[in-house]
Image (cartoon, rainbow, N blue to C red):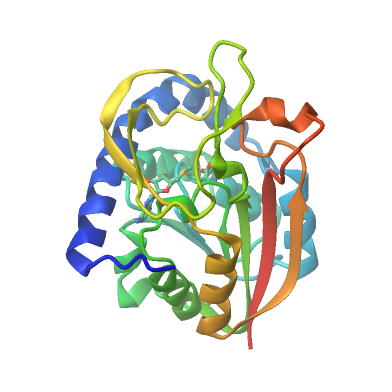
Length: 272
Ligand SMILES: C[S@@+](CC[C@H](N)C(=O)[O-])C[C@H]1O[C@@H](n2cnc3c(N)ncnc32)[C@H](O)[C@@H]1O
């Protein structure tokens, strides 16, 4: 695609998004943190979805070093740790969410899980691994103004022979606008949309809480954009799955329509 942002523009997008995610953090804290603190104080707790865990088990993460990009409140990384991962590092730009992640890590009692506040494009060299397994779960790629740069980061973090696991909203689903008040979701955007979505709706994805947030910027990346960015970085595709059911609480009604679009996907890439 013909979309290219300068380093300065990329920085402006991610600074704005960081501010919007920091605003979402107290909303999520109120909804979820007490429950998660209780849950992570017991051994073995996991919030990982089965379709992710299945793939991650195939890759093999037990005893392996794991990094998660855009780890938010760290619940998934801590879940991997509870299920036997080796040393873990989570990266996220939002200081407010990383604070929640550190609280959860503390009650879990794990000493080799670290959470780092950073724009993923600026991960410091001393935290760059390499790691055996690098993970991103749903709701990450759309925040990336620069997909080639994103895969460069993944490549740098992954050890030779190591794996990248990606769970993401399917780009076809991003053509839809969610119906309001029980109305059906409907096609609205081009699959090839080049300009960012600029929104001031809140970013709560637990309960869909509505509040006015500072502007945030997200980006459509076609399947070809993502595949080619990974291939050009030298990754080899080991697995690709598309899901026809809701994995993101977005346009959930489409799951039951006759013309059901693809809704989610997982990918496993190997650095060879
Ligand atoms: C949808 S959320 C997290 C996804 C994860 N599946 C979850 O539910 O915890 C997206 C996260 O990406 C982070 N983020 C967005 N852009 C980022 C960037 N450029 N660098 C680091 N983190 C970023 C946000 O702060 C937010 O925590």
